[in-house]
Length: 114
Image (tube, rainbow, N blue to C red; front, top):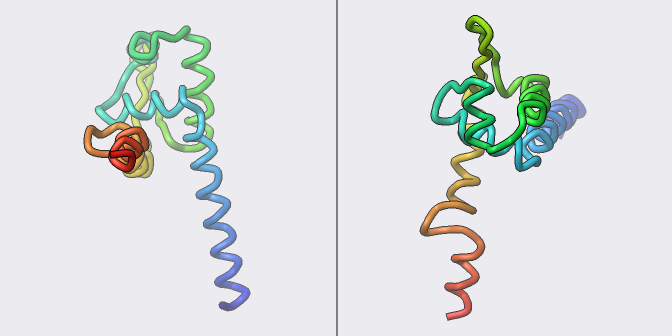
């Protein structure tokens, strides 16, 4: 592998690491899960998450900083949507591994005990 290829690989690893760090907080992960279904206002996200506005706004700020969500202002309301399909693609894998009826570590553990 050339030095140039190694530099590209290292840069890609750093980008992937930043994305995974942004996803590693349960509040941010839940926000992204809700945004997969479409644009939501901050108020809608507060209600869906049963969380205070300050907490939701803090997590949205981090997701915005990482380039995962895009804000849109309409009057006094701010709406958020996914910037691209990266979070959706990762969340589909996470859902299959942890949330789907057929999969998940709990289900797999139960199958292996039988």
